[in-house]
Amino acid sequence: MTPTRATTPTRTWLDAATFLPPVTGAAAIAERLLLLLHYGINWDNGWVGRRRELYWDHHLPDRVRVATYTGGADLDRWWSTVATDLESAPSTKEQRLELSVLLREESIPVLTLLRENTTALVLRTRIVAEAVQARRSTTATLTSPRRQK
Image (cartoon, rainbow, N blue to C red):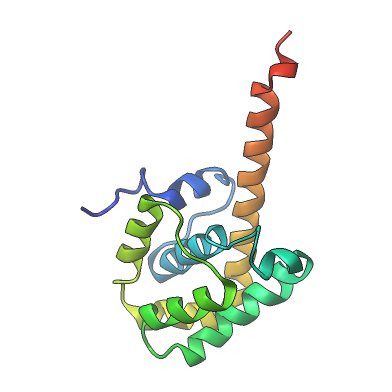
């Protein structure tokens, strides 16, 4: 079963950033892969969690770009390389399903964008992650028992 646009984990995250203009084609695939990569990182016990201050500007873009050169010409190898480097793995069945679908997409256009447009794609990923965090914070504040008097 192919996940529908409305039910994928990345669609849920992207819905938090509706102000961000949508991308299509290979750019959308690259964006969704980066979101799955970001949300799969072991923030509590992995090395990336101990180096958060350099994550967005150095660790993520550097490893994404390098993996496009060392991972060969297919998305499977790219994912294996970058996910291993960043200690990332999908944490839910839905994330695994979406990743399995994305990794079957045509590799060369996606890898080219990941290599040549790394900064823009990482910025979009960061914007979405910040929007998701803001939404979660707002939801937590609104539903906090202390706020209900």
